[in-house]
Length: 342
Ligand code: ASP
Image 1 (tube, rainbow, N blue to C red):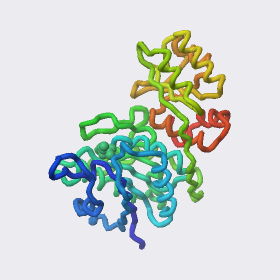
Image 2 (image 1 turned 90 degrees about the horizontal axis):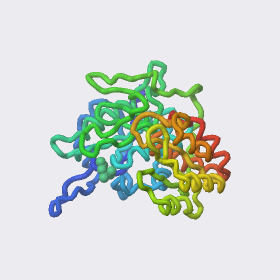
Image 3 (image 1 turned 60 degrees about the vertical axis):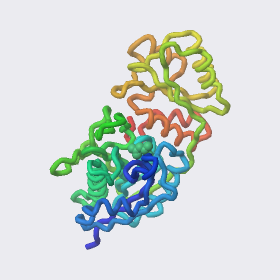
């Protein structure tokens, strides 16, 4: 029988950093050392190959072109492995996971992103457990021989999340990620318990992986706050070439009922700019019918992003504006879940 196989892709981030001997700053070190730090991986008996980006990056430096490189790498190696683990900085892991979930259509193999809050070489690192569990999940099959979790996921501190539902919630604690609007796909204790009801499986297996590589970047995120000035909103909405805005509103999708704000939003919509409403709350969903302040937004043509995370909303818009030149098509697909994102 063939050995189960996992490709580990190293992009950078804290998991592979060490303190600079002189400045004490955290700087990346070479990937071979990361593997040396986790000899436990050999005990699985899997074939584990590695690929390291060069240069490796702090994930704060991530750009859409990097997501394209990642997706194309997975496409190139897709038939050779049972699953993929991406070691990634935590700062933008939610964005990368969301982007990949939309870019890789018909995905049938696990793509598990993980990282750590403490470098892997440190005695109290959280990196080892995250890395080892991510590899085990990436190779896991169910009884019919298909992948147990054929999705883009984030594994962090004992929990496996759908990638486009999770976001970095805590800058210090080991439990850095949360997914308040969707249950974990698996929980790792003595055993890894899979929540198969929450995992999305293809209706028909065997479809060819399709990677979308065009991502639009004429997008903006606008967070509503008390005292927001007209000139600020104007500056964003009058950005040349702008196609869509993720509007982060209060509560269930409410914004101040200010004439100038509603007027600017109405003019933007009339000028074919998509305004997608998501809530600033980490949990719950937009429901523009609940309050008059939300209803006004709906009246001027703002559309609902339901319970999407900012990361999912932004990257979904990037994918759709990359795919379609007409915003009518973008709007149509914004209202359909593409990868379980709402
Ligand atoms: N700045 C780092 C990064 O995102 C933090 C981390 O890895 O946790 O690359």
